Length: 409
Image (cartoon, rainbow, N blue to C red; front, side, top):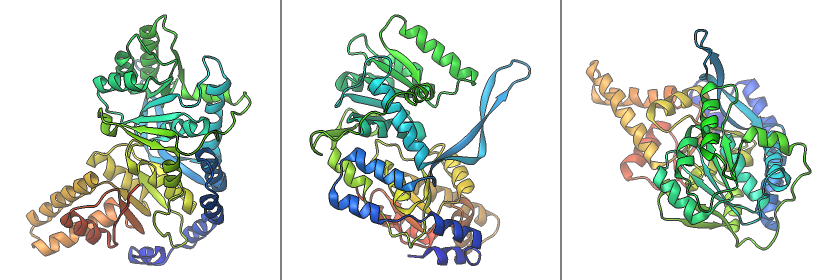
């Protein structure tokens, strides 16, 4: 496997001095993680220790969006920019603590340990905050993918009886429609809600009208965090033992569930994924939290002092766009995305052949295009969440110039 210095040398000379200085400064003291693993802390304690250790370094990021006002109609929308906005470990955990305090001590019925929290969201900072709040308060996290059908939402809500449902604002209509009149959650939290966006305000207003006189309290996550900042902190959950259910996974929104214990999640968060040669990772993640690989990019960032960035989608166009902007140093994959990259490679290769290149030259040029232009030419390490077929494994190893390792939970 290429070291960081060798990879930078491969794609354009030695590691730039400013890059090297940044990477050395960002590399943490891993002794904290080592001691945490040996003493087997509870999940909430482990997350707090890992994130505090990360400190003021950027830990998570997502594509920035800027508001745009139509001068004719006054309607405000959001436009995706070509940069990633980041939050430090300290900022992320402060938000987690604020939301935990608001749910534990704020207005409305308080959540109680072992309550279920259903989250319907794409990979992103708001969804991650809710997942960590569940660990903080001893709740059961039930993450669902953003495209889960309405009938599956209704079935899962009936089965889990959550006290809280957190959902991205663009899925609020569907979620409200899936709620039945029995076993209603006490709280509905709108994720990624931006008050200045006209469409968001319209969706939330419609949801409030739909909820009518029901006891459900609908709040945006930002508003909830603002309230929690003014309240005493909620205690970290350390009751019982690590055998309690901490997550229920309905893979892809299916009716089949898998219960994950706190101890299993703690092992995952303290997992040594790949050797980093002393370099912090810069990674892209597009894997939802209901998938076993959904937390692995953040685990790698926490252990290396690096940053993981949430992608805008898993379709080929979004993936290529995000990768080209970020140029990651670590690449986390799932088999379906490797297959998508393979077909994109074949399309590019066919174009080279049509332009007159022979098959060998076309493959070499397509390899270089995918490695340097699409992925960014900086990948030091890569992993895939499940074993690949022989053909796909050979393809991705050849294109990246490194061995892509299959990891398990």
